[in-house]
Image (cartoon, rainbow, N blue to C red; front, side):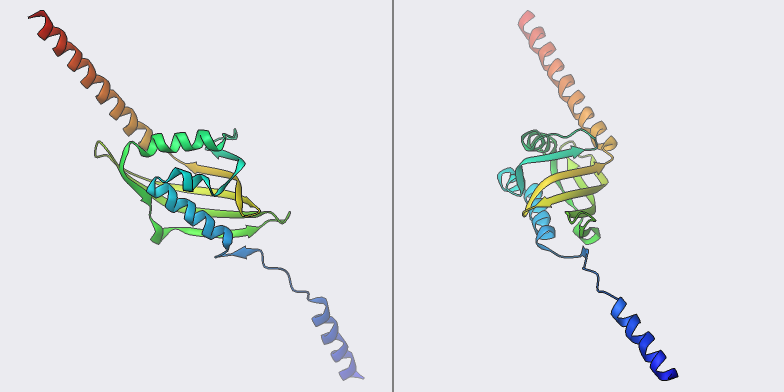
Length: 178
């Protein structure tokens, strides 16, 4: 009788344990798509970069207010134009895909973004991306980073260009007066 009771408890224990679906993935189609998008960003191939997004994608850059894909493409092209080289440090990057409680697919990416600006200033900043996928396309992207150093370097480059332009104008005026 005692053995029957123990056997019954074991059966109840095993039958009550249901297997939960996998919710975290180190590799998936979505992580591969995000990595391909990052490679397109690093090469400045904006058409290929855009191809990973749904036309209606909402992009949040350090903000609760979304911008559209066209506006983000213009921002990135302008920003990367100030760099002589830039990219993510792949050896220290971390990426994972998660199926959330609503069964939505999200890919999270953490990496160090480094680059050299055209004026020689070296920039390095941690970046976090939270990217939502629907039917294989990015439908929402949340980008978080501290742009303080990069913005200061870009402002310094802009001020140097303005000063050079003013000096050139003053020299031209001086030459014309003589």
